[in-house]
Image (tube, protein in one colour):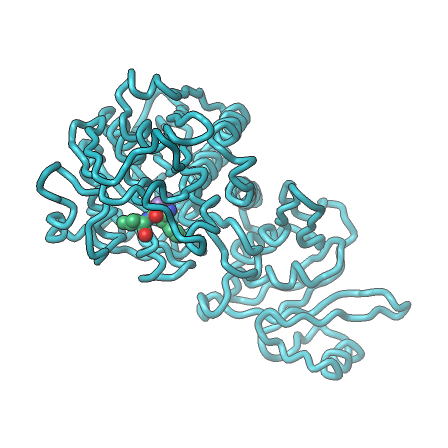
Length: 459
Ligand code: BES
Ligand code: MN
Ligand code: ZN
């Protein structure tokens, strides 16, 4: 499904955005109707207006000023988009302080539904593109979000490493990326021992998927966790924890969406963009890696496996090491890495880590400006000792579990050394219950913030 605005020549019905008092231009009959229906202009409240001949002639929608946001909800018009009937709708007058781009993006996002296994439909109402917003950019954002959602929502039986590779190849073809894949025993021959160790028990071969675009300019490397299903391995997850683990390739789905947006908006022109996705299943079999194993990573650092369920940092370590060898100006990792991040900040606010204060501030600002919540957490140096077990260089799962998101980030940072700047995003990739513009299921986090921030950071 492709997000869209109303066709340019469509006959559109008027949509009145209301903040408190009803707008002056509204005729007396419509006013009386709104009153009789208890329409108070509360954010998200919708009131359909009847025409003389019994048709729907227009609608009223309560909206909040941008200054009041973020309040309970993001996406001022997303709820209305889902409530309004099919057809084209044109905002009569945008009140001062309502962010048109935010409202329009929310409307586009409400058009999403996951219809792969049974018919499903998102919002059918179409918004006439507001004046003064970059509609191509908003459409690129929505398209990328739909891609990320579809990849996450597709269960592991249809989104294993093979299918994730196919999806990456498809995006690459559409947006001018070259593709290189190293799979199976070649991972050992080419020195990706951790990706191989984690993925070798899977039904499909583990692999490292690489997409590249551009030959000159600053280099940006994006690394996304592509664990297509996370059973936890031999330290198996309890059923409650395993239920959602089709989404453990959320980092991969998000960097693919981000790379697509960078290409589609022109932000990838004049830079060298590289996407790396270690794609594996963390499964159980006779050849599975075990607790207590000590593995030597691509970088040469040895890692003691204290829990096979801390697999994400292992596959990312080899991919980050490869990326860092090329000394990119920016290295970014995105991963559904820890339960601890959820305990700390909940499903909506992914933590990110970045040592550069100015860059972190730019990312936070872009997060706010692009309606894509993030919160900075520290690479807390004194906790380094927690990931040092003694009989190997590193421990993949510090006992005690304190500061779980930070220690995972510190683990990754060891392998990102050599990059000019590094930022890591511990995302959730899942919307636990429906919200305006977001169906229950896969959701993209952090990508729009990075789309906003990266062009400036790469200068
Ligand atoms: N994929 C999980 C993390 C996860 C779980 C993210 C639930 C979102 C929701 C990851 O591979 C994992 O299992 N992490 C462990 C690490 C621990 C064993 C050190 C965790 O967070 O419990
Ligand atoms: Mn795990
Ligand atoms: Zn995992």
